[in-house]
Image 1 (cartoon, rainbow, N blue to C red):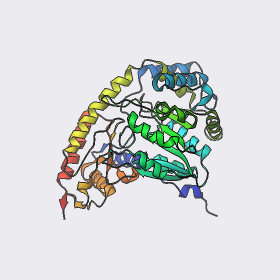
Image 2: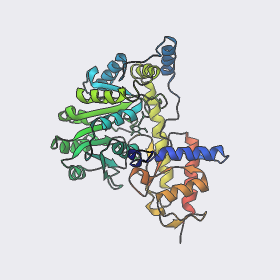
Image 3: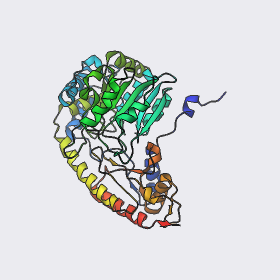
Image 4: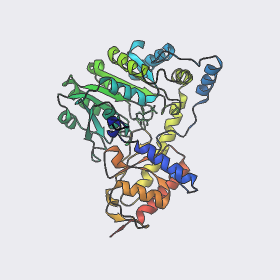
Length: 402
Ligand SMILES: Cc1ncc(COP(=O)(O)O)c(C=O)c1O
């Protein structure tokens, strides 16, 4: 009898966490490493949120709470959905979990049966396909090309839907590309979904607050109210409020689904950390100025990174609408040999040689379902970004055709 489960054989560890760990190891060994792999803001959690957490601890908010969130937080989430997304949810339509990740996981675990298909636009956040596999479903990637700025079209979505399609996972702005769907682009997708009543929509709005220039963030149930009854609108405080370590995510959706997700959570982790829930409550109800300040910093960094990467021979880097990632195409580097003698056969070889020869850690595109590319997280200081891009440029300038 095998000790490890068959389920485990279906999934692989997160490539982004692997790169972050490798970079940390090299750093610990004394190497001059710049990590552009981690998907988290470099800012501290705002002070008012930290203070709220301290007050929660000191006033004894340290016990079990309701499994899927304290009532005050659910109320604040309802208010947030109405204020920012024009969506009306009642508290019994809200669930709170340990990060956005657990919310998505609960939803898939609560609904996927063997043979159920889940459409995932690629490039995708690394965890989506593996979570679908863990839940027993079948991931169906649909690739958004560089020409379409990494977005999928209505025709592609239509062609991917079958009678077995259970979910369509939508993530805008996207990790890893930063691509955001505007209202017209999203409406084209929701029009398709309106014709297929068996398909549910899981909208991962984690990067809602990180959109640049005059881009307007929109979410499916807002653009097409006809989808409200089969949409799970997922969000969290991790990225917007620089609260990645606090582990609070949430969703609004139909009561039966929310209840089912609560059942999964009740038999796995129970309530998300009580103190973090009070901190998230302050994030959602306290001053919101932090969001605009944060966004301006990220926009400046995006512009810096895009212009510096486009100056690298062999690299094409579109300007994304949001998040804190860029996803440069490196077709012009493939097949060459680096100054250190490495053959750049694919994007994984590129990322490995880049790390070894320059100390810059990025995540290779194959992990996200579209190659040859790599992902840069620009959630770090301007000076560090400039140094990293300078090293990437000299690495690219050193590539030779053989
Ligand atoms: C698209 C997307 N969804 C969800 C998450 C998970 O967020 P959390 O840290 O709240 O679990 C991430 C984190 O990287 C993400 O990029």
